[in-house]
Length: 128
Image (cartoon, rainbow, N blue to C red; front, side, top):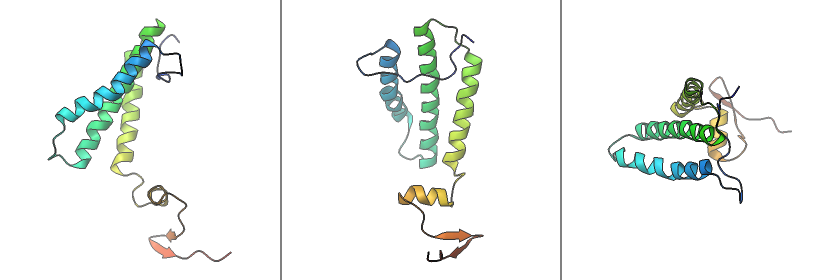
């Protein structure tokens, strides 16, 4: 297959590339551009969706830049599909697929969840 589906890492130490430089510019530029359109009156949810969309656009553009630099065919449909699927997964998790679960509580507390909730009821762990 001669097309690029997923972007490579943008830069390597002491080996900068045009794609890496443009990726760095996109990393800083697109969120700043998004900030011009985001209003303070918007909800946190709406702002988050805008930033997820910016990340999807950045991924697509990076894949295109790498294809151009590598002089290979760029399959817009496959890359677009992959970016849309990843955007969809990100939105699902952002909306709260893991809301009120042990995984979410562990991530928030920054450690192992010490309590145990079974069927919505809190139960102490037996002493071991």
